[in-house]
Amino acid sequence: CSTGTTAKSWDMLFKSTLGVLVALAVCVDALPLDGRTLKPHLPTNISVWDEPFAEFMVEFARAAYCDHSVLVDWTCQLCFEGFELRWVTPLNNTKDVQAFVGYHSLGNLIIVSFRGTQDLKNWVEDLEFSKIDFDYQPCANASSPPIENWTPECKIHKGFWDSYESVSDNITTAVTSLRQQHPNALIAVTGHSFGGALAALSAVDLNLKLGNAVMYSFGEPRVGNWYFAQFLDHKMNGAAFRVVHNRDLVPHLPGAGTTPLLSLNFFHERTEVWQRGASMLYTYQVCDGSGEDPECSDSLWPWMLQVSDHAQYMGRTMHDCAPPPVPPISEP
Image (cartoon, rainbow, N blue to C red; front, side, top):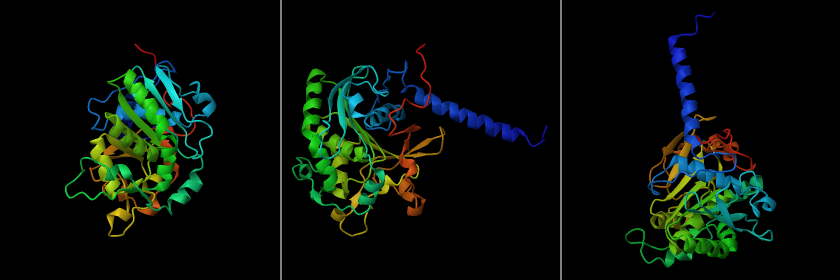
């Protein structure tokens, strides 16, 4: 037997094993209890980052990637019981948007979820050359400004707006109908990648129209300029969280820009939550309220970024419509 096995190495092994068990315990509350039922964990304060609720929401972000044929009758592998599907994007959507709206009876939640892009390579290449080219009118029409001496120069990426606009009326109708049936329900909006950008636009839109909405996005690109970010932050009242996995390239696109005019530069809304680590040994760093915290993922140099981290969030592969990685457990 080697004498290299010291008390210190055993201590390190114990801590590593304990870390895995803790990570699994955090995930379990949001995982299917019988293979089909997703038990919700409800945040006590929607303006504060809630990791178990993020674990819950990421499953609906993943479900948006399931094939349309199994979404419409809610029979996909991620189509959990306790969820009443109200609306799914028609197949003839010209902007290649797939989204769904429904009601989760176990948590009194109205869920809105957007699928990410189907062609990541070409989409990333397009994002690298994107411009802020569309005036965001709700900002100009705001009754209460986010800050003193407010200049409503909100601009966003026109491609994101056109995509959201192609489904916004249907989503508003479905969510409004559900809110009438369930007046106290929380509206929870999610999406991954391109779907994260649409989730940001949808969350602020629904909050303006109906109130009481929260957003958890995953791998969201920059949507608009600094003014738009301030407007979204103000209207969401802190109830918006962007999870960034490790060195994921997409949240750093389109480039932030370096012009002295804030209206021409892309800028993230708050609050970033930086997921770091590998396997199940993740840590989550809640970043500052600036939207572009230099101590979080913005601390990475461009050459350190990678597309592979975009496919994995909170221990799940985002685009495969498969059950969660941790085996289901039975209720006690």
